[in-house]
Amino acid sequence: MKWNVVLFLGLAASTLVFAIRSGTSGGVSERGRVVYDQYCQRCHGSDGSGGKGPYDIRTREVWKSEPRDLILVLAFGASGRTVYGQPGIRLGMPPAPYSDEDLAAVAMYAMQNIGKRTVKITAEEVSDVKAEHLTRMRDQRAK
Ligand code: HEC
Image (cartoon, rainbow, N blue to C red; front, side, top):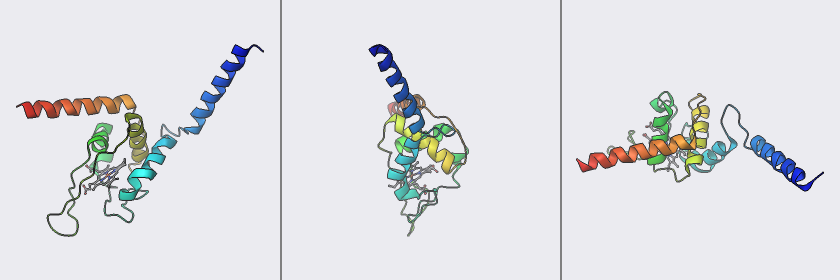
């Protein structure tokens, strides 16, 4: 076998292994689960119930609405609508410090795991939603 053929086969094989390892089950990647477990779980529990924390998000509207709304929450954070402990104390969610790829992956994972919905979200979509939101905020400030 010629070297270039061997190289090609090697590349093809590693691409295949990568595709399998990133484990697409219904479009939801392993990466999404890893990011969720590393970052989101501490506040929302593994199932969105809040676990040991107070942030039960299982019945939020965001799971029923278009993926855009979930992307906005992840990229820009959320203001707390629930009053915790004493009146006037509301806790917000900070923007998730991840790349567009990772945000897309964790959004799909959360949609599947908590929202029980399979949706396809790409890094490009995350990037578009972010850009559109920032433009809107800038335009509002300019008024
Ligand atoms: C530091 C704690 C913290 C982390 C980490 C965190 N969140 Fe949150 N999250 C919150 C709080 C606080 C709220 C607001 C709770 C409320 O509105 O009552 C919230 C709200 C939400 C909501 C509901 C927003 C709405 O408008 O109803 C979703 C969905 C959500 N988080 C998903 C995630 C995902 C997915 C991750 C991981 C990428 C994550 N969160 C990481 C604290 C956190």
